[in-house]
Image (cartoon, rainbow over the protein chains, first blue to last red):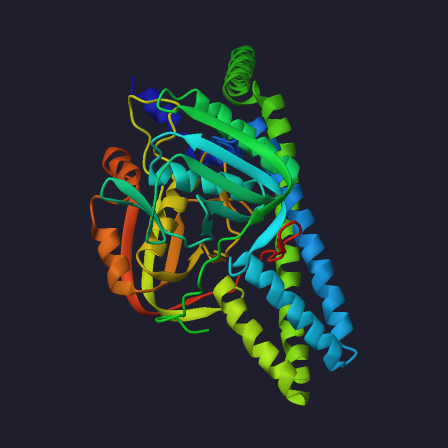
Length: 234
Length: 240
């Protein structure tokens, strides 16, 4: 009985030296295998996790939006490039013309002047909330509205639509239904958005009437008064 | 002894083979079965990433061109009083359109995704959506904001909010995702009051309690908003 331990201890050095490299090799192999497996599983899981909530349809819409956005930015960059090149000529006449043109555009964007152009008029007879109106305004902006009004109140970013007592105020002025939303912009996209919006509204039992019409030359006469900066400075 | 050792090796080899096969099958079942779908989605994601890069490049280009134009107009203004008056007028309009930086007191609001509810699988109410950001921006304007930026993106008079689950797209920008930081310059006290009022941002506050959405704010005496780098031109609306 004692021989077994003795036997096993007969060549301790030889046994250790013969098994050592093999054991290290196997250990190393297992380690590498485990590392590769973990990396593979983690990277695969990472991809899946990063795509969580982003199905192909959502990504396709995103691609469509980005294409449209990039087209708009490219057009803007090209226009600015042309302006810069013209200004490089050093002519004050050119500078004045450009500044006048930009001032005109900014007055339109900021709602400081009456405007006209192709667009849609949406009419809704329903007890809309400020949130409903804010959502409608945003939906039209997403569809490319460049100028808007709600019941003849000009709407710009920063316009405050809020609940006041039983009614709604738009920039401090009382407004009540039936509602009329006018938007000037790319006519096809605006019509599509208006169509979708009115269809969805008609499914709501609170809505007595919801419709829209496209106009080739719609006028928005209301304007806003520019509020001077009180707290901020450029 | 040799036969036994060979048998042991064969056994280990067969076991390892079987284990490897089972492991591969398991991984394929769990992760690679939707491999085609993942590959398709990855291709779409790559397209999105490429378009986002183009988008960022255009924005940088626009910002650079605006700077150059500003310099050239400044040089022209030095040569003529009429040009200088025009330039001053345009500078004011640009500032109100968000086309220049804006500095002043204000608030910074942090908005972040919560955790999915255990009994609501598939629901995305725990994610911040574009309506949340839109509501917050509207509230800040109501509270006296004179300028706002979301994740460094300045809100302009043409700004719009859209997006799919968990992403927010502002104007022609790249999709933004949580966490969001909304910085507003303006009437700091009034904005802080609005943000402290539990009757505001109803949906967001409900989901804050339900799913742990982050909604924190802090006032600051000096904040700076970047200039808008999106298109600020109209093609269809013309002055009457």
